Length: 229
Picture 1 (cartoon, rainbow, N blue to C red):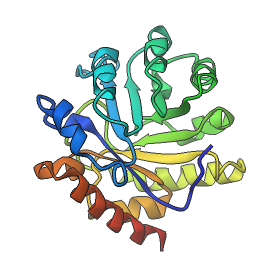
Picture 2 (cartoon, helix red, strand yellow):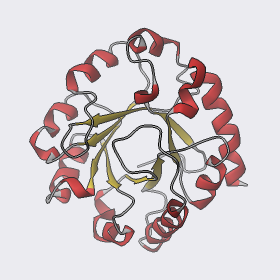
Picture 3 (cartoon, rainbow, N blue to C red):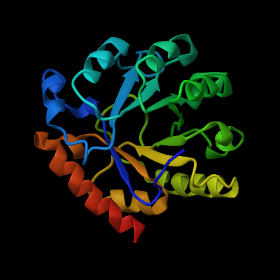
Picture 4 (cartoon, rainbow, N blue to C red):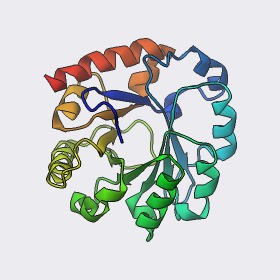
């Protein structure tokens, strides 16, 4: 359960970092500014690209105490889930489209003490989440097609965020289930995304531009707060 629903949390996506030096660079990130580190695990099957595995994540943990936000863009996550649970991240998110057993997997994540997230691709109807909300701590709405870094924010996402917020509210879970949005976030659109209902925002280039992550995230938060007014 989330302790504070009155703020906006930023989760920089490390896929936008210089991965050759990130093990060193991550020590420079301020835990008082950077709320999570978003780690996109891609398997080359569920999405076309390949990124990180549990070995890389384990090594990264030794360089930072910023909570990890692990996003499994992988087919059949139940096959390797235990390896990610062992890393004790703050959040593990699976994709609705990636498995036939979402409730079983979400229960396994929660039973481990990790928060459970469920992600939806832009073409997946939001209404599919209704029966799964009691098993969730977070819903991640993709505002781009998953698996390709650097895409432009899809404007249909604004309607989808608002629809999801309404479904969560009707279920009486507004304080328990947070909305995360990932893809094409900028200082120019983050306030509108927050106004629509997001409270956790993933940022790639907007966070890592010029390597000034702490400064960039601070500016994103300043812009995001305009969406709460």
